[in-house]
Length: 220
Length: 220
Image (cartoon, rainbow over all chains, first blue to last red; front, top):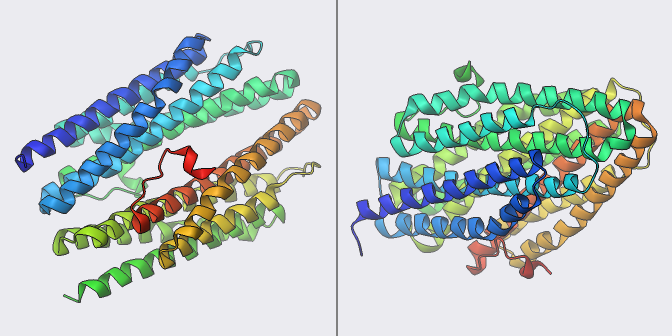
């Protein structure tokens, strides 16, 4: 059996690889919506099984490390964080798939003419995902806190999009299905941001031993 | 330090207590919607912090057990399953809070007159939650499989509610906000069902060592 430290590095490496796949999935799914690009949406759907398989592999590896190496203290915290982050990444991949599916249904319907902030919201969310993973790899708690601060901005954008889409549906009842799809896309982006926040919280716990879950006061 | 077996029992016991709180939250949030009962919705909001605190306590206990007792084989699987189930239960609690918040906004708007299956969908979902936790406590893989089978029925109900609400919004644009709230409630119920499915999958892995994640063929 290889050296424990080497295995921990491999675990980190695989999580990074998984986050790369998930980031691409998010990017492609959003661009499929904005550019009405069917092939981008299909690529997201095709990559789903790869992300799912990676989740299982990483989970197995982490549990095996727990069982065989019986790590303590910081190594134990790292491995339990890896299990949680892995789980969050897989959910983010699922959410990207939902966005890609919405993109496909939108492409087959007439476009709606409303000024909506989906592209901006998406770029904010993509930045959160990347920062959360960077914070994990570099054990950088400042970067992790930065992710927590962005969460409110994303919630505000989501609320703005909801309000706008409600008005739009009231004025254009024939466009209800399309507007509803955009509402769901905004909701999925917000949930991706929430998972990034989970990861940032895990990083803070890992680096500083501070438990910030459910403590909104830390975020303000 | 107390005997390890005793501590595992306490972990199981606390998870059960947590699931009791979460089940009440789901029940109350749905009845707040159906009966337009403001006080039920407020009770869900009041209990949120208790569920959050329980999640942290259970998580801490599980990680402490991993660190101090360095369990192997089935005990290790039990503790990692407990960490995941705990996480799912907390998310279910959050979803019940979202439903309660939607209930409060619906109560302050004129009711909409549509025949919707929210109460039936809710009762199906509540049964899934209870069965998934029973399956965990009794290590009953048949019961866990039973939960997986119900997931499709819930998805179908959700789709039916979506279609009905889209038609309703097209015909009654003044009622878009209320109909949209009902769409979100159906979506939240479906996500609670998904978390029950996650728990059932963890139970199958725990009891039979079978990994059914992402393998749709096992469910049919």
